[in-house]
Amino acid sequence: MGKEEQARRVVCTRGLGGSKGPVRVGFLLLDNFTLIAQSAAIDPLRMANHLSGEQHYQWFTLSETGDPVRASDGQRILPDAPMDSAQDLDIVIVCGGVGQQQAGTKAHLRFLQAQARRGAMVGGVCTGAWVLAQAGLLDGYRASIHWECIAGLQEAFPKVLVTNRLFTIEANRLTSSGGTAPLDMMLRLIGQQHGRELVSAISEMFVYERVRGEQEQQRIPLRHVLGTSQPRLREIVELMEANVEEPLDLAELSVAARISRRQLERLFLKHLDCSPSRYYLTIRMNRARQLLRQTSMTIIEVATACGFVSTPHFSKCYRAAFGVPPSSERTIEPAVRGVRGRRGVFVAEERLETGLPTSTAELMLMAARGEATYGSVRVRPEVAAPMC
Image (cartoon, rainbow, N blue to C red; front, top):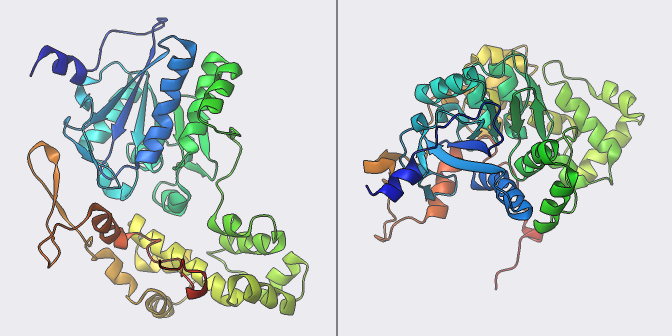
């Protein structure tokens, strides 16, 4: 290995305590991390340096051993350095993604705990907060995570104050949801350190019309679909989602929404193509699926947490909803397995019968079958894109 390569793969370890040098940020890449969240966190730092003409920030991508890490889209990313070489970082951000329960290793947890002990700010993007919680670094802190994992994080780590906010910066902790939310979080951090003028210039360069604040909530899929056209329907659905363990009956929902039961049923049929009871059951079943896949709760505990007094009835409803009994969720293997070769590169075990290698896109789709939201959206024939 040449001197240039050695310099690239070893993080600078000179002390920064109270110095005026650049802020050093380490991005710890977990298996199946999402590139969009990682890029949204790194690029604001790059642009802050670019626009200011000064090196305010240095950043390094890290992995457990320095070997390549597979992103959620199948790309293999070579990090700058192994994490153990990063002994003097100011900020460490865990880049999570798919399969967050299995992504964090004991070595990851020890590294993060050591960084926190020495005073580094620790954070996570997308599902990175899950690994921070596993390390015990979010106990007593408010934390943000991708909306798909909120329920699971709450159940698995009750000491964490989970919020639905896009991002949360509290003391020496910073966490965000996925997608573009890390961009808003990093802009907030840059603004705190270097002022609003730089933040405005960065957002203009990224054609980012509105920088979102810390108090803004993640938009659940229903809100995204309905927009502002059906506030009453959104209100009812939010009531359902907030009352999963002790479900409300239709009469209570009607009173809360200030409409008759008949109007309530028509509203759901018109906009969601199902009855209120059916939609409520779907919410409870999806929550149950998340808890079964993301926590170690027993089936009885999951049934109770989702409003069922009878475990057999819960199992019957679960099988009707997903085609498998709840017990099978603990034994289903991922559709595609990878084997680690040298340098940590993942090699697909399966090939198409034609002899051609399976495409990355197909591999990722197959691997996603184990996710709670896989196949959860029904595409209606009348709105499907025409084939040319």
